[in-house]
Length: 156
Image 1 (cartoon, rainbow, N blue to C red):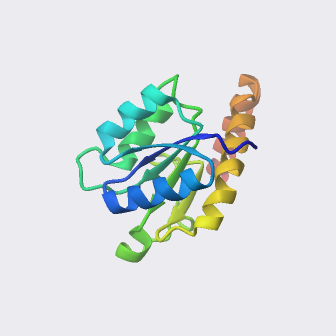
Image 2 (image 1 turned 135 degrees about the vertical axis):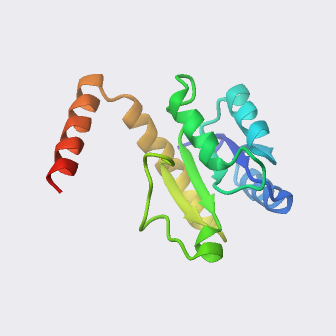
Image 3 (image 1 turned 90 degrees about the vertical axis):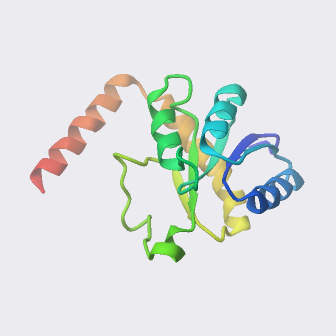
């Protein structure tokens, strides 16, 4: 996958934004950043990036949870892959990968802070590729998957 991919990074920590922007640009990505949720959502709507790196918990009223939910419900944004990023593992002792909540927060991938930058470089194209394949699935297969998931949860 080419490295001229467009990335939007949304995080309320300006030092983190600068670090990620610099790192990603040095690795060939086109990077746009936003320091709060509303600016991030506006930027995502404008830029239509290949992937969004989204801080989960921000100090602003419009957090990564809300951005993700909004993106998943808007037709133009719903197929843009999201990599959720958070320090909640350190701060709250919560491991998102062990306790995901797909109803409220449904990123395509998740990384804990501090972000392993080499893992991030590998995860970006993987996540974009998976999202592209998912968006090309016929509607009947999506419906079938939903029905199977419902049956599986009912049997638990």
